[in-house]
Image (tube, rainbow, N blue to C red; front, side):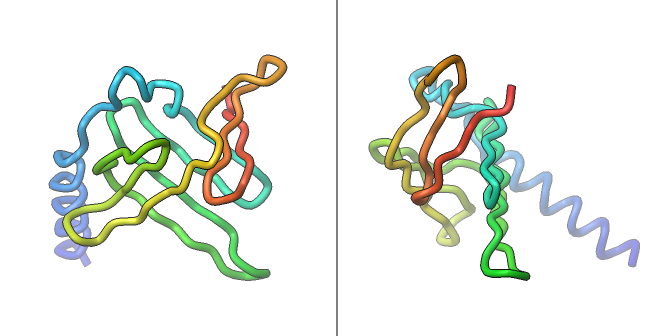
Length: 111
């Protein structure tokens, strides 16, 4: 068991080194974004943690460094294993709250 934990920790540290900080023009993406079915954490140092409820008992999770931005969309992963998040409405302020639509889900930034 100790060996498994060591290898998991070592793997995480290797992955952590792959992230690049968010570009200044993407600073509004940083934060904890939530809806009733999705949570998305984007850190200023370029890491993402994502969880989305699927169906009644399932969920999908993704975590890793941001690899690239293409338009408003961004890709997360390592090497050939990547997930693209489609941002149809980029971060913007509405009535004092920050909103963003990712993969068809409207998210609110938690401040």
